[in-house]
Length: 221
Image (cartoon, rainbow, N blue to C red; front, side, top):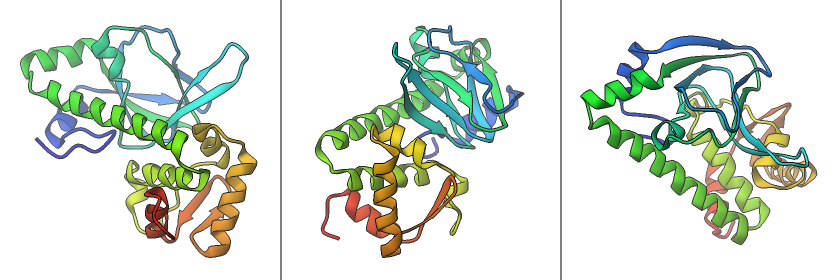
């Protein structure tokens, strides 16, 4: 089985799913599924950006994550049989692959070993969630922000290209970390003065990722 990164499956399974998938275009601000809906498909983002979030009774939104191209998502509810736990909608015009629940379960019935890949994927995501919760309690904001930026960079295929900007806004980062946009802006401005990052509109470049790695690990910088 190929190595599986958070959001990615092994090459064989990935290829098989793509063969059985249908393409779906999702215009900006269009909802893909909503919290409480029954799971009917597995998705892979080809182009664009999909926002995962929950909204409380007071109307306040908590951003859970942003899906970037090349990543499969929506698998958890398909295996638990429970309703979707969050909303998903396009932050920009997006194109996806859709594998129906019926097709997915049929593939796994014929090749049960593929289930292990999904279990690995869900395990990695669960571990990542625990790490974020731990960091949210124990780490100061600069360390938490460094961890989040490195996570976004490592889970986006496009962002692995040297010099490529991370396509994420300060507002999204603030919602992910549960702080104000002003707090995020202050840290980024400090880093920009130090030559750690370069801030642009709704994107930023990681100029010295080693610095961010040390900060994320609570090492002296």
